[in-house]
Length: 568
Image (cartoon, rainbow, N blue to C red; front, side):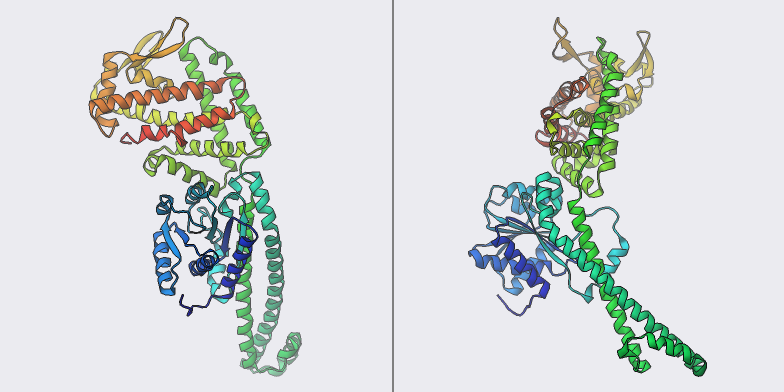
């Protein structure tokens, strides 16, 4: 390795801290530098050092192409050859196991995927980052200006942390109570030290500011008197101000005092930058350790409201009339979904929201996510975050998870209504001159008679899909659903015409028939297995909620499967 590059003190300190943690048995480490200066060079020297420990190659993984290419180029110039460089997707598809893995510029989702890949491997990860590198909301603009305006005056603050299960300290809050306790203990000494140093710097800043104020007042009075030729008249004031100066400054000439003023100003800039950096790191640590989710009291209050809603709709929910029952189920779903969503959104920070949004984008794909209604996005994020919060609580098995399922089914209803109702109405409006030519299923009934009025938007439910697409439910003698069969030919042909023309991307007869059947079976299963059971007076258990999330979103990806075949 070429030795013409000398590491700075804080970079050497970083290597020493990492080495100490590894020797103490840490498996996952996080390196946080306030300004992000020299992270890549530091990590290259770290990789060389780690290679010398075990004589094995080190993997270095990057989230950004520019960082990947620049660091790879720097490694060649420095002469470091013991590193294999990867972008995230390349590393995830690579089968080689590494003793050491260094991570740079990774998103929350990147880290989650890598964590899943390495969790059963005997490896040590070191994740490099700067405070608030992922923060997507408002930042403290004044703090950031102070940090970067004077960054050249001082060295960055470097903190090295160990985590237990997660590969980055920023993810500790999402890993459950035990991880938060572990990180809190790990972090306590560093946080207290930073706070004491910050307080000491603030005292020193005030002292320098006071000295500088005295010096400026003296210089201003002296210069004013000199300019106005009133030295004798101002002599007493000048002597008073001079007496307030430090002993070693009283006999200096004006030119020397002016130079001293510049020194004070430089010291103030340095102290201000240092305090800003410490504030930034302290804020980062507080963010890492901040509790995630909704407290127990709020969750129980939400349960009470769900139960209250169930009781208010009890008669209709137990009705033998399927239309009345379906309308009541929709009202229950809508009220509960809105209530739980509002509760969750009020508790989620911007960073938490982004964390769950990235998870959903990954499983649904960007294309599908970007075509979702904003309400659907909110409902799905609320469902995911609420579930993650609840299952990490001590009494998780006693909770009612119906709110989770109803958020998911509400999101599905929003997307279904958009494609099977709103857009279909537009199609029929162009195809026919009169509403009386539309399928019966989209027209209002009054006194048992079909009218020439289109049903209201809130009358379309998940249960409407089967009849709107031209099918019907078949029941046995005891009223149990046993299957589906083709309904009115005109209704079926109208929807098929719409599906071929406007709905699906690949409009071949065979493909469209298969997609329609797959979609209504998916929607019916969600309606019957997850939405309807949420109307029961007893609670919906954790297993049902997990099954709902896995079926619609996470494992079987049925929402993605349905929407990815559609044009919008």
